Length: 351
Ligand SMILES: Cc1ncc(COP(=O)(O)O)c(C=O)c1O
Image 1: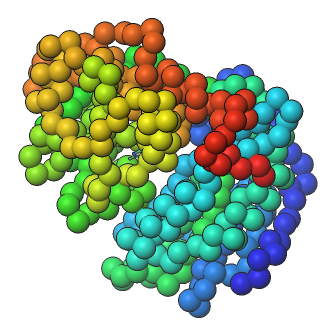
Image 2: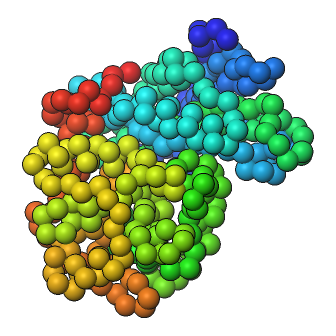
């Protein structure tokens, strides 16, 4: 494969048709996409083309066996109109880890970084300045080989598509702690961003929605005693002034926001405990008043405070705190992402 990306520009831009003040998340896409095919045992010529539908054979294996992995990341524009990425190599490492677990080929890092930057440069006008505005970037890999044998495909497509996003306010998030359904199992694919992990959550989450809960906090599949993560977020618990979060393992996604928060918290002198945490401990802390906060962390919302949780029919409300840890972490992370503060970690990357 040559590293030079072939670029075909769109003849006209759709940008003038877009109402950037009223964007629904993930429904509008930029003018271009990155695409690269895998066949004959190697990745072929990478290309940037006008954003367009794909034509796939109905027997393409992705439709039958769900051989598909993806990533979610963002680009931000600072006040001088410079565009920044946040820890992009971590997303590439993670998609390759996910791909390996689903018997899919890894994608080369240099081609990913070059393609990503070239794509965002081309669609730079879609990254709107202003705190809260961003470009959501979705790299993904699908098995395209037309063959319905239940075995790994010999052909794949790696794509990157981009969607402008506005500040995401999740509102009052109330969560249900899982007692019956599970998101992942020991030895399974929970740590991977495998498409099927998300499909499997839709039904239990819709049941939770009907009961007035926006998200589920998943527990371990064996005992349902240990708190793991939420739908598309890792979860943190503030007990008194200590931040507690579950260790990542084969069932939990190793979130980039999670590890950034752990680092920022430690460097701010906040005690962090990365350890298994039981539902019973959470309930005890809630009853005694030691539970000060629960929040989710993820690329979409950065941090999402949780206002109540339910377990076995009992609802536990979490008091609101003006000086919450979650608001401190959110501000510190956004300041790094939008180039408003120093980045002592080297997380920010210009395109
Ligand atoms: C299951 C799951 N957990 C956690 C996260 C948060 O990860 P990150 O902070 O890298 O966005 C995500 C989102 O990517 C996710 O899908």
